[in-house]
Image 1 (tube, rainbow, N blue to C red):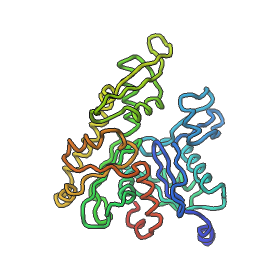
Image 2 (image 1 turned 45 degrees about the vertical axis):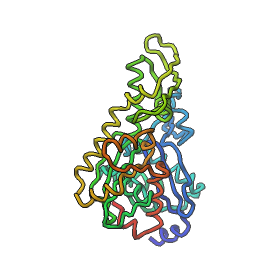
Image 3 (image 1 turned 90 degrees about the vertical axis):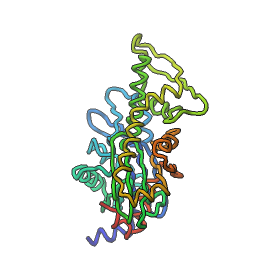
Length: 340
């Protein structure tokens, strides 16, 4: 205990958004110090970690037989414990400049639908990676703190957080979650929908990274004012030869219709289950959008037309969760209220 207290004086506590697609870290007093893809490249035989983050993401779909580039997080939770532990350790050492004796206290944002077993996996992986103490905060709550919603007041605040692996909607009042719903449909499912659509319609096989690029460039949830097109490259499944193709935003909107419908349905169910007094507050304040998936073109317009409520996109949707975890780290009284 004494050693923990002494090392606590030298350590820089961290807030971590351990996302399916990206991991972000805030170092107490320094702001965001790390923003890397949640990807690890390992040697398939001796399990040695060869690259983590951006370097490993470049290898996705391009590795030789003895190297595997993998995402240790799936649907917002740990899918591969050893690889996730290696990733957390690598990132912590990177922001701590490899001062291995220093053991930080960390706040980690986790999906609201997480099970006890999954919570324990996150805690264990963090402690194995050299963390002194772990606090878990639900992602929608962290996002609400991050976008500076008045969560401690007796009024309803609704937040929709669309990440890489999960979409979460929560109604927050008096520093607590009144209602939350988490569905494992988000950015990754949108990428898979684009990949499947192009394979089905054009017999063209594209990679995960290409699908993600299509979504970010011409993907939309609502008809755009002007048609957008994009040139893509892949392998023709009939001839086996690489081929180039031009696709437009209407096709991609059709490809994305299923995952986007699931997101809209999640919001509608949450609105139905919200107590009437809080629902009245949401009519005035609207719904706040956070997370990388909320940056899809026209998603706010679609939700506005489906719910007839004001829809506000957060200033920096990608950083909302980690900023909230960072604010909780600075304020111990708030952290005790919101940690699970």
